[in-house]
Amino acid sequence: MEDNAFYVALSLLLNLDADLFQIVALSLQVSLLAVLVAALLGFPLGAAVALWRFPGRGGVIVVLNALMGLPPVVAGLTVYLLLSRAGPLGEWGLLFTPSAMVIAQIVLVLPILAALSRQKVEELLGEYREQFISLGMSRSRMMPTLLWDARFALLTVLLAGFGRASAEVGAVMMVGGNIDGVTRVMTTAIVLETSKGDLPLALGLGIVLLTLVMLINAGAYIVSELAKRRMG
Amino acid sequence: MTSFSPLLDAASSLCAPPALHFGDVAFSHLNRMLFGPCSFALDGAGPTLIMGPNGAGKSLLLRLAHGLLSPTRGQVSWSGDGRPRQAMVFQHPVLLRRSALANLTHALAVNSTPRNARKGLALEALERFGLSASADTPARVLSGGEQQRLALARAWTLSPSVLFLDEPTSALDPAAIRAVETAVLEFHQRGTRIVMTTHDLHQARRLAGDVLFLAGGKLREHSPAESFFSSPVSREAQAFIAGELVE
Picture 1 (cartoon, each protein chain N blue to C red):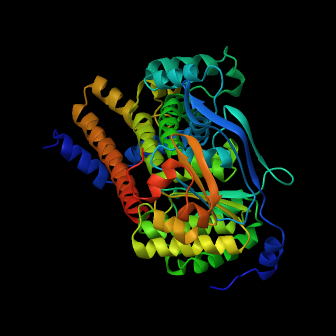
Picture 2: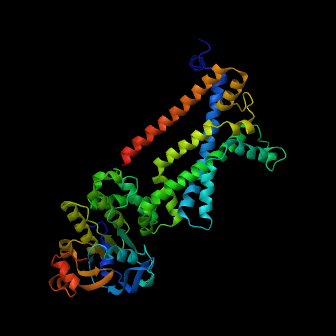
Picture 3: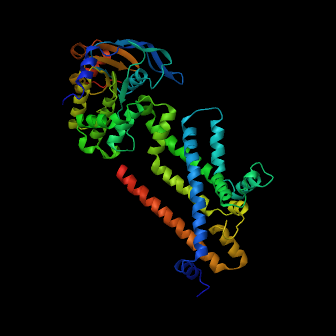
């Protein structure tokens, strides 16, 4: 019975295992903060690319789309080099701290949010363009209106970003170091327990991670469906 | 319906609405001439109805006049200083994914109306167009007629000197058409220059002060409504009024 992953997951949860809760809390904290910062930067960036015509715009779109598939270890390596003692940002002393993990996840999530919001905003702009010009709106005035009116679509984009952040392991492992009680998150803990051979614990953690991601997605889905039905 | 701003109305009816001049205006796309070249002036009292079969260039004329499109040649100009305040109501109203009230306050905000005045003006416009009960309803779940009235209310809050309407009633039922026409006349009485396209002859008879008749991207006729309907000059207009299928 003790070898059953579901049993382990359930007993971890029911016993309010302190270590588990610390790991879960840190995972959520890091990923949510990364998605929040990436959204604050990425949504206006995506909207700006949708709104303005400038030389090299096509190149920017291609790069953003390509970076959606950036391998986490490459992002991790880049952030590692930036933050390491000898690196340009070494003075900040952030390597192997949760902040470094947030930065790495921002690098991963930002292109997703920018590229997808660019698409959504451009679709909406196609519908609104004539009315906006008729109202005499400047492009910078159109941006907040478009972002707000695309809010339901952007919520889905946000979830895609959160999925990427919470599921990735390579980048946080490299820049966080999986230090017990400091930078250990669910994904890195699963890798560690698997390599130690404690498969039930690894699976138990996996089930908890999956459940969390499901709950967050279900919540967002319900909110957006209700709102969509109300707003037409 | 009562006017909520008698002073403004008095002032705007004193000074005639700005006149619109098309000087040899043409619009082409991919080397195909889609509109013009043509010249005319809208300086009468109006309302001006633009008529003609589909593809005659009615919508293009409106968009060129409103500045949504730039002419490939010629000049669109207005009497008076600069560009007058103008608004446009489209065939399919473009409404934001927000409540009816928020659609109006957004337009007022864009128009740099002070924040504390926006809600009051918006509510007055909703009441004027019979939409008070729908203030908090999302604009895009309103019926077609209500959506078009909301678009008119939005134009109303902007107090335009010129209002363009692009077949605003083509998708509406008779009751909704009447509401739109009443609103158009109300704008007219406020001293707003009305420039409206339609392919509905009856509607043109009800509303028109003068008629611009287009066919094949060219202006065929510009005459006062009475003479246009009783004795049209151009062959195309004669056929159109006689109910023949003009292409």
